[in-house]
Length: 153
Image (cartoon, rainbow, N blue to C red):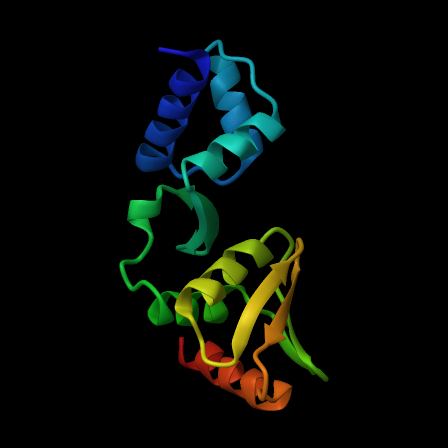
């Protein structure tokens, strides 16, 4: 077993069995297990494991992809909009979505996966998502639809 696969196996186990709230916590756990790793390495491992950052019981934690609520697509987007979006702003030919730091990618991926009419694609930073509109889509109408979903989620 390679060092990488051993490290990822341990991370996967910890995600399933413990409430892991940060990459730094995983670096520390790996260190205690005698495996040196940086935060950047753990970040890549979480990406490859397709771990998802969720808010459960008032705390943020990483979970394996199979532990994310099974409501894929639209239901997943509604939940993420309700939990992670702090503001939805219309900006001429874009809709701008604000999230807490480190959460924009999670919401953008769900928005892309949900295939919402009027959304051509997204670009996510750390806490901001630019939503490119399909031709003929009004930023005001799309923003209003997303706000409605956010409240309903």
